[in-house]
Image (cartoon, rainbow, N blue to C red):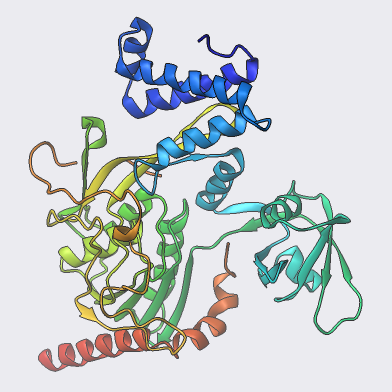
Amino acid sequence: MAAPKSNTLRFWISIAAAILIATLGTGFYHSLSAGSDESYKSLKIFTDVLDLVEKNYVDPVDTKELVEKAIQGMVSSLDPHSALLTPDAFEELKIDTQGKFTGIGIHVTMRDGFVTVVSPIEGTPAYEAGIKAKDKIIKVDGTPTTDLRDAVNRMRGPKGTKVVVTVIRADESEPIDFNLIRDVIPIYSVKSAVLKPGYGYIWITNFREETSADLVAALSQMESADVPLKGLVLDLRDNPGGILSQAIEISDLFIEEGTILTIKGRLDKHSKSFNAHPNPVKRDYPIVVLINGGSASASEIVAGALQDQKRALILGTTSFGKGSVQTVETLRDGYGLKFTIARYYTPSGRSIQAKGVEPDLVVPASKVEEVDDTAGNRDRIAEKDLLNHLDAKPLTEGKKAVEENGNGADPQESIQSALLAKIQTDGQVMRALEILISYQIFKDRNHG
């Protein structure tokens, strides 16, 4: 049967072919041209099935939607972290890694059928205008909001443009209109506070383009204080990861020499090794790193490197166990393809894929509302629970080698009091502080 000849269908078939080429390698293109590759035969079956469904299915079908779902199914069947990114999803990924966007400055979620404000970001148009947590957004520019993504897209826009956001508030009888001017909204991934003189706390929420620079700024401020830094609590709990290069740079801040990370892929270009470099600032103070079942990917790289290099004590519960590296390729019409290119290994050569980083000291979360995940976080979803997850493989033959894979918070000074109030009731943070203080006491005695 001849393949469909509509422009739309030909376009989506070319997208499917492009993804097959990206997934199977450039050799596929030559085989496709020669007409002798098994992949070509499979692609021909695909076009035949699509043609039959398009012409004969009981209800009219959307060809673009069918092919998009077929591609998504193909890619997602590889492993849980490979995916076709629609233009909206691809744009969200760029925003998340770049660390800023233009909009009004609020965190929102769907709650009870309403787009609901989680919190306004301090210093942004929404915050200055008086939008509050728990406000329910019912309209944007007079159009009712029923879908979270659509509402977010309509609230975002070029800097300096106007938008009217209508909310209902529990203690107000009538809806409230907020006339706002969009602005650049920074996304901070590093929050810091001084637990007590000489002891710092830094929380990295994820790994974006500016994370290492923001971390250096926070460290420098603590290191230059009247009481120099004697110990650091580095919080990586519930950090889902992000840009691989940032995890390398952050690990390198605390390690003077040796391996930070090795990745190994099927192709030589995806197999690399990263080593530490001497730092102009000697950060030899003790470090306690906090992890839990929500610590994944880049955060596990940092924890694993500092643990293997004997640079930090890892405290908490076993991490998520995502030991693979993804890259993102740009496709036509704003689409993107995220797919796995390698497994990574800690300095000792261990793979944490579907296993996680095990803490040196197991300390479950102490708050009543948090999950006690002492037994390997089994009340959480972990990498090994995901459909089609990769198996761990030993790092044996071949070169040691790492390819880069690839909302917000308040400015640091503004969040100090709120952050301190939160962490001072956090049992894991307080245990980490006790360990650092005890270390300093023994150190002083030995030198006394």
